Length: 134
Image 1 (cartoon, rainbow, N blue to C red):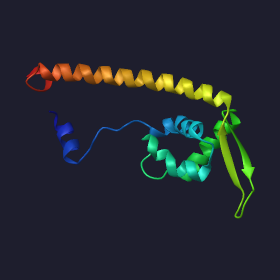
Image 2 (spheres, rainbow, N blue to C red; image 1 turned 180 degrees about the horizontal axis):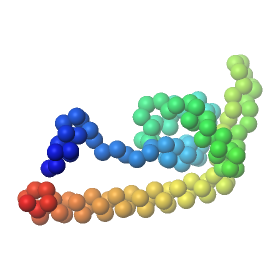
Image 3 (spheres, rainbow, N blue to C red; image 1 turned 30 degrees about the horizontal axis):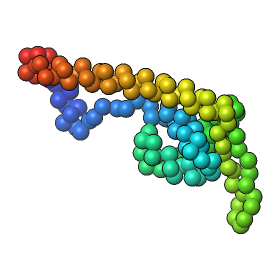
Image 4 (cartoon, rainbow, N blue to C red; image 1 turned 90 degrees about the vertical axis):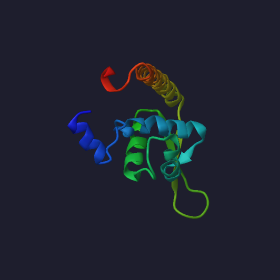
């Protein structure tokens, strides 16, 4: 094992998972496919999809919702019934549903590639005595 890797492991380092934010938009679309929601509800529930740890930053979520809406993938309307301030209700559009399907296809291919990679690693690990077949 290299000295550099030993040092990073000793500091508690672990592999990074890439930019989780790239999966915010499909997560929002899936949340809206499940049911139309308010932004606050999405902020509180988006962590269930595994790409955000804890509560999602509101500014990030609303920025993505505005982008999805301007792309025609999400639509919103103000709800003014009841007491309290007006709230914006978001819904997935048919175009958003199609875009979500494309995301799912992409994510499935990524998952398949990762599983193949892990399987290959496990095969190599079984036939070796240690790192680099030493």
